[in-house]
Length: 233
Ligand code: ADP
Image (cartoon, rainbow, N blue to C red; front, side):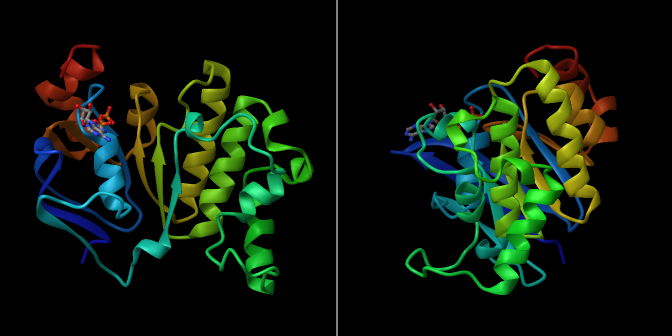
């Protein structure tokens, strides 16, 4: 059984359908890139996977004992204010699922926090204020926070939005490292070459799914070729 699936899923806002007839499955170990024009429903799908948006028809299911609590999420960087008054360690720790009112962390939680800081190579920044970091460093912190929440599935919404190409080139290999360590990745991306380099599967949305399959098949099919060449898919 797959890890995450959608069956004939429809999503809408105030009666306006923005995703329809989406059926797909994500297996453990997949790296799925969700591509499509602006407004094609990618972020809305992610909200639905996180349980923040209710389907108007169809359904989302989880297999292999996965629950929403086992999914880590990294929002677009722009959604965290630049004045966010917290240290790196506090931001990463906020990914742990413990009660927000519990003043201490268990040994396992502390180990998880430390592991996330190490994997993303930001231990040396732990006490720095989040807002004082560069854009690329902030992305590493947000990835570490998402990793604190899970070692199974990460949902990433445009992980390089607003970053310059040099930093973008550093972030994708890091995400690949997380994938290689066994984490299933679902990522919205506008950076098509990176998507094609690292993804195992592609979902191309244009309200309806116009393609769902392996990255190799996408590169060969007409809709994929048009999109990769910069057309409108
Ligand atoms: P994408 O992530 O592919 O850019 P979105 O999922 O953000 O697309 O948006 C899909 C459609 O839903 C767009 O037409 C957008 O205007 C609309 N939309 C997104 N969020 C809302 C909202 N909160 N209320 C109403 N319409 C929305």
